[in-house]
Length: 428
Image (cartoon, rainbow, N blue to C red):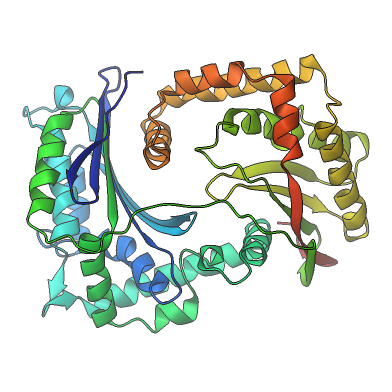
């Protein structure tokens, strides 16, 4: 995989293009980063959904869908999320390479032009978003919030995250709240759209069999027509607070209780210990051969699942488990025991090699998917690092036993949240 070079094409606007003819398609994405705040989260979260249903040239969903069909079935995706202390609003379009266009169209310009139109010329009525579009998207995003609430595994994770944040904005739901969404006005959404174009940090990526220079020029000209001011600059600091371990629980009508343990690590993507941390987490609970899976689930049969995952932006390690209520305390104790073994170096060379092999497969498979590659290079851009997956894998291969122990020794338990089931309801 060839290197991409991130370039500044405007105040707080960056472009990264990677042309690779092995693909028959291309993917163009624009990610907007804004401060994650309670007073703006709902209006910001609505924008990708609202602007992904229509635009000035295609004023309703039917006409926009027809245009996508005309572009050989191009796919448009929008979403709202968060990364560390920032709210992330994403717009992506995927389509056919120009080599396969029947009429010789420059598909990069066609796709980028459509994306630009949706962003810079929304489907307005009387100078603002259409009330019917707002009504439709309010319903959709409220349903999305409900679906997240009904996913008990996700709900438990978010509750643990909110407790870790302890009132700081980075712990809030990136979609906001149903009450906040339902109360939004067209005036608030118009202001949010203006903030999006003038105040956000912008990361544009074009990958695949794509005329990246044409995409870069198009968006450079588009953003040059806007007065960019008070531009947000992404930075996310790790959670570093010394405090007594916090335990919280809620009762729920579910058969399977959910246990989420949140650990501070102090390690974020720019930390030189990052490669070792990834190997350590894989050995601890990130693979089918990990200590949590082999011991807590298989050997002791204490849970239905038990795995570890890393939220690098804040340096938080999460351990999630589905358990019977009577086993919650035992699982918590055993997770702590397995972490102690990692800190004491109670693992074998075979375990290290097994995890590195699993990571090798994950890194090499990134080049098979444009969406996976885009996610990789977007995260690299935010880290100020431009490693290819192959180069990052080289760092992983060099990780030593001592470095794994050092990374494990940085892990401290902060918060434990249990969603305690009563033996009825859903198992999800």
